[in-house]
Figure: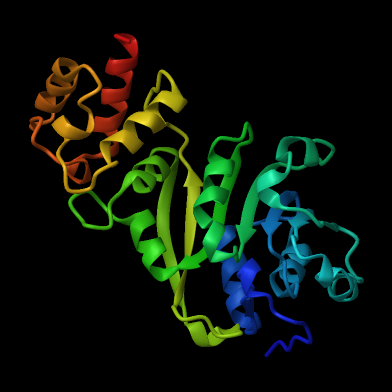
Length: 268
């Protein structure tokens, strides 16, 4: 088991893995090769970073905690294919940071701080980069939300957005006992594989807006949530899928939202 001689900081959501077998499983799931570039956020004690570096061509890691610099330098000293940027990933210019790397496929693999899971995914989705696969450790209930299907209470705007861009799969559960310090919840490894044949979309920003507006009041129906849109168009699209304006957003599949966004954008 990995041991850490560091001061853990709650404000950064620091919970470090201690079991190397879990780390190996995470990298196995990713399918990383020696021609790959991997982006990691929150290397922490470098247990995952070292395994990534042993298999990938290069690893670019972002660490917000400057106090971990000496620890990471020590733990990564035997690897010449790892670069750690001590900055906030959410404030970074990712496109610029990776422009000088040569790789065949781009991956994002990380045990991310739980409190910024969704912002990280949004940054990745709306970057101009094409990540072949994303493998993240998230809270178990968040993993359920990402991978659920229409009609389930966990189904929300983030579910729709992620499932438009990726094939989402829950890989395996990680017990809270595998971390130092021990968090209050179990975790799950979730993989996101980029879809090769996405449904045609007129405008991605407008698509996201329609989705978020559709879910803005969870207990209200589409008629109420999209009352500021052309409801005749909305009703027409819904009818083509066997729904009406009384349907709630949680009942609608990704393709319904695609058609809604395209039809509404065309008639703006």
